[in-house]
Image (cartoon, rainbow, N blue to C red; front, side, top):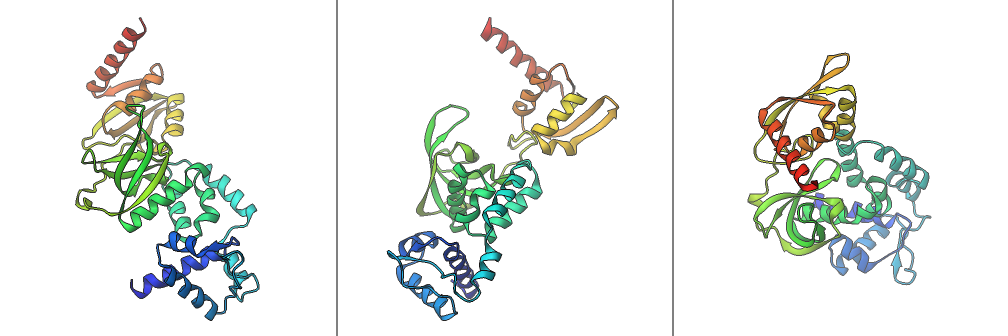
Length: 303
């Protein structure tokens, strides 16, 4: 580890111990993947720098509030409960597809102590999984996605993967599936829990993200579609798929044009079928045939 990495690690531990929550040496070691000897050395470094780490209570450590600079660091590194609540409301009011939200989330994760503000950034029930995936990506380790619920089979199954990137605003994780031998996106809300393994990536050269269309469908090939939308269809498209807005233009006062590439017809097809009286398919003919076949299958299934 070089000097810059050591400094970064020291700052992370300083933030961790200044959160107001007492931590055991084991917690420090596990959180930052360091030895007990290194943990005690860092604690002594903080003492030497003027931070008061009093005799541990029940074996738990924290930086004392009477330490020099404690107030300044506390105000800099952490949100008050009121600030966290307001920030949570503000962030979750922004669409998950907004790229500025993604940048804000990334910066907050980089700057602040996870345990204090993770729930501000992502929903509480998913925050620990996101943290573990970030750790695995940073350390280039394999993970087990415990009890992953597949949308295709509707079955829960453990998946052994190499996670390497998040989609916009941490909605999904790009990972190399070691069983299937391909890269896939795994929806983070469908992950039961994440177990970070002490196994390094072995297929980094195969880590590739595929293009993803505005309907959140990924694929290797793209087809351009052109739709005429009513005002209602236009507004619903922007609400449900915010990235589609960049591909919408006004034809006249009551009609709009959507023209964009898609990775297959599943995503756009579902949207068109839900608003079939509000949308006209202009291009391509293959999309029209795709929806006709879907409609026939539905009629057959319910008849």
